[in-house]
Every structure is written in C-alpha cells, then in structure tokens.
Image 1: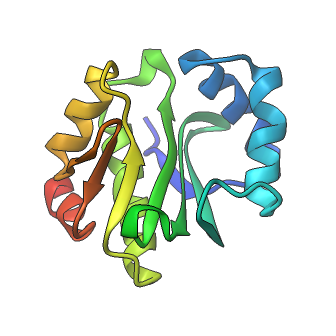
Image 2 (image 1 turned 120 degrees about the horizontal axis):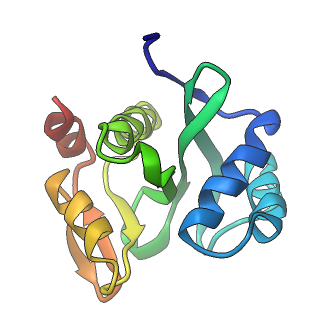
Length: 156
C-alpha cells in the first residue's frame, strides 16, 4: 500500500475538498466558491492577513482530508486554523493529526506561534482533538495554542 501524500492544495483539489467539507456541514455547492476565494486570497476571514495555506492528504489520486490556515490578528493570535476535515471513512488513521502537523510547521515558518481555532462547544470531538494536540480554551467557542509548537510535540 503506497504511503499517504501530504502536499499543498491546488485549485484542481477544490472539488474534492468541497465534497469533504460538505460531509461536515453544508453542500459542495456552498463550499466550492468559498474554498476557491480563500485559496486565491479573495475572501478574508475576520482579522485575517494575506499569507495562507491549504494542505491536502492524498492516497493515489483521491483527496482524503484537508486543512487550511492563515496569519491573523484575531484575539491577539498570530495564526488561525480555518478548516480541517477528513472523509468520515478515513478517520482514526492519524490523517487529521498529520495535517495539523503540516499546518503547525507552516505557522512556525511564518513566525506565527499563538494560533486560534473556532471550536463550537457542541463539537465535542473537535474540541477533544484540539485538546489532545495541546490547545486550550480561549473564549466561548474558541481554542488557542499559546505556542503552536506544542501541537508538533503532541504529533511525535
């Protein structure tokens, strides 16, 4: 079995990424233009700065998961994890953890240490994932890595 490939996303990955995001919420039609505008730097989350990245996990030619993040000034943070999603049938394989590691390395390379993520209180599985990787509560609905390098240590 070939190893999973983790790489920066391209616009040719958008259809698969929209399908994966729709598995969590919304529809592919909803996600397609949002992902495209985000990747092109045409859509800016609150307090977002231009530098951003999207990584995908690929097995052969099939995208299994994605993670996106950008630099920010929101809540006194340097970076923000925008989206992370893995196909339901591919979960529990460590894909999300590895995607987080790639994004954390990108943040460190871009001098972003304090990184926040929107984590709704009712999304217990996401909150457990972030806690397991070193995040803490920031404010209602938000979590933070005061130093994203803790996520890299948790992934070892």
